[in-house]
Length: 299
Image (tube, rainbow, N blue to C red):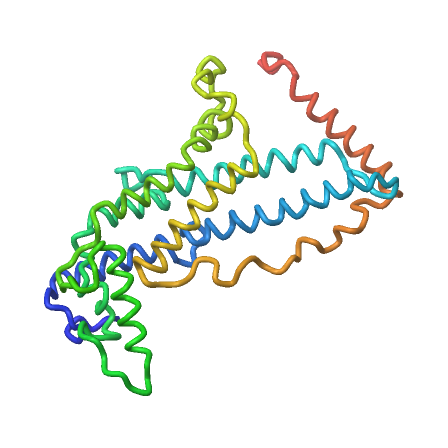
């Protein structure tokens, strides 16, 4: 708990409101829950790395043209479809607007940006620097323990950037630039094309007559398009976490060790099991065919 009285901030009332909102922003951004922005982003980029590694393996297999290696076409198509749909929807979720109804609240970067913009008056220079009581507003004395000076200098420089106020014009009451949050939102508009694709082809089965508003280019999903969205999302989330909230790094540990390579060099199925697999598929096919029984015959 932050001792408000010990913080070198003149406007204690605004400080109390900021601390309350900051806890909420931290929860949305960095919480350990699966739906926090950081966890959504981490899950998305890790899945992308796994797919691209497997995609590279597929390329190498095709290039080698060895009878000892082969690819199953239906399985490859399923992998591609699942990858595209899951990643496009992940991008859409992270850039969704929040609903006014609390029962339909979502956790997304746009929700976070909108709320920070709404309460931007709480983010003043003195609060940004001193909200947690780790340092005073004035420059700490240089001692053997340089941590207070490092925090003070870093936060002052950060606020210079997000307020667009030069060092020689610093004032306790400085506020973040009005255009800052708009720039962050503009950065995420890179994802608009994939959001439109998600709405038309993944989240909803849209009538083909309504798809004429999408250009042929918008109907194509490429790894390059995904990368553009990943970069916009990672940069925005990192800025909010590292600079604006002066908190944890998003991808400080990098990607996980390549455990997804385990057993990739081995056959997926033993030859002796192929007969059982054919039988399994035929049984499933017959079961599905049975679903076509006349519904009215039961009445």
